[in-house]
Length: 288
Image 1: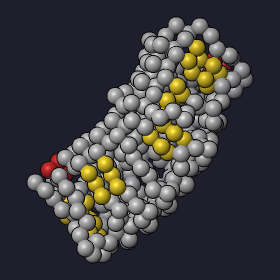
Image 2: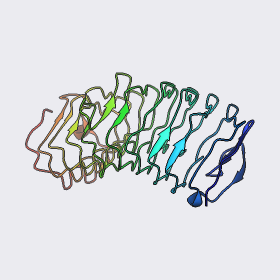
Image 3: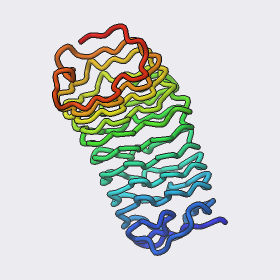
Image 4: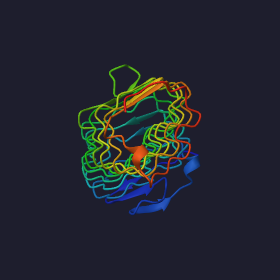
């Protein structure tokens, strides 16, 4: 079945059938193609959450005519588009008003790269949990234009990249998750499983991470089984109440470096830290 999405003034036919302005819904797993018709207009659409969710047979998606200037929610927009190998954006894809991008590209396992337009703003986004979860086909990811100053939730953001080619975070290598100076974590309270199951990571540069408001770091580095050392000297754990499984399954790690005074988990009486170092490697050194 080849389904065509027809966009009319102020309305959109949604794959996921959860769009506020949708006038019909279709069987997502049968959609093979999406076309923009003449007269298509998304300028008045405010909600695109789950718009293409579950469209597992989609191979490519051309959104160059999408005007998203008034959209406030893109949660789960492409969630489960497992067959998708390319998404085309233009500068009309403006995300300045968007506050929720959680699960936006979740389980888009066929994507090898994502090219964000200059108008892909994240300045007002509060939620990025699961945003790239399960994007296991990625060879690299350039999010150097992201401003995450108001993000509160980054749980599972990069989790499940175990089959991808990505080997580093915050570096300049060709197979990295490239971040910029505006990738801030100062308002993030939830870091749970952020890098979980990123089993090919050999380098994590977290020097710009400000975790002063972090409350939970459960499973943050779980099964990062290729990392031999981890520098967390920028971390402040003053408000952290849960560090369970934080280093679980880091079988190759031999050293973890922390700040002498800002890493104070051992002093807490209200901390949940079950299996924090379970199945971790032979840790031999660290500061703190």
